[in-house]
Length: 225
Image (cartoon, rainbow, N blue to C red):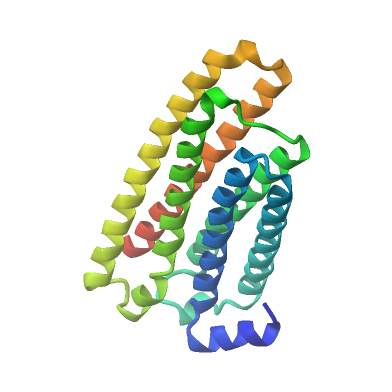
């Protein structure tokens, strides 16, 4: 994002750039689903293209995060402490970081998901990506919250969104348990080093959902204040 575009967003609302940052983060984690689909099809051209898109979006999120940190108004002009908003953006920024880490590991090692766990693994990734998307959409309500002074129906709606986010994270946890059980069952069919890195990938994808849930809880803390 150009400096002019950033300042235009900031002029509209002190949190408009945070909404844009959340949108970019959501697009980046969505792309992780595209990446896994291409990998499952053994479409390495598609894998590389998707990986490049993830990296591009993660860089955009990083650039915008730095702009926000440098230009977000001091707490005197905000209805909530500036430090709380900066902590929120830090949590949101971990979502594209995780997508980049997962795609980088799988691309760098040219990893394949074993046939025996592919269906459950894909379901697990889908649930984690949906959880991250829910977190991004929750943050995108931040401008409405500011306008409503963190009160009223907007705050109640946010509470519902975060409840849904918690439910999605729980579904992701259950899917992770299923994937781990299936991976355990096929461990003897793949090399030990592949097993190690597959468990690492599963762990990182699970943490994507965990970090998304943390975003929702941080939003609720802002409302509570």
